[in-house]
Amino acid sequence: MEITEQVRRFFDDRPVEFLQIGAGDGNTADPLVDLIRNNQRWFGVFVEPVPWLLQCVRRLHDNAGRFVYDGCAIADHDGTCNFYHVDPDVQYVPGDRPPPFWHLIGSTNRDLISERWHGKFEPFIKKTMVTCMTLHTLIHRRNLHGLDVLAIDAEGYDARIIQQINFNIIAPHVIIYETEHMTREEELNVTALLMHGHGYTLTPEGNNTLAMR
Image (cartoon, rainbow, N blue to C red; front, side, top):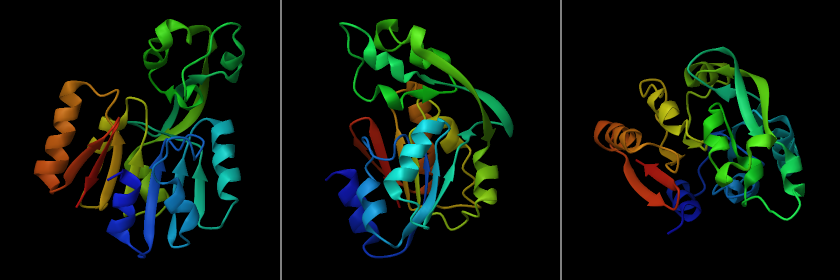
């Protein structure tokens, strides 16, 4: 059963507070988009540090009043940090097409981008100084203490974000995260933390894992 349907059945028609870190364009490869758009009882925060992608999210959800849009990055400190993403001009390279979802690739780690597509992204990597904060700061700033769903797509930073969760402050029923860029050690540590430490059931689906309890 796909992630969307599992989450739908889990919450049924209950109100759901969500936090989506790495919202991208709000649509592409997003297992929650239909649930968020079509259920008036879903409300929460989209986090996306790339300005033009955050505008895509705003347009998609039409400022429905149920959502907050935060143009920051989640990091290990509060302040600013460099964020790297792919210039849209990459799609106009003669004779070569970038891989699908190129526009969603962004990270605080430049190497994660330069290593992809056989190094062809290198001339198109853009650096932007963005506001950053820890997960703890964001939770308090946006008053997300009743968080039900935490969805993370942070291009290699997912494990570090999960390790920032203070389960005495928030206890999401559902956590969705990407394992594609995790090291084996990071994946094992996250599994131990969620499954053995906090009683989640883990279900892999493609590059994502669904944790539920």
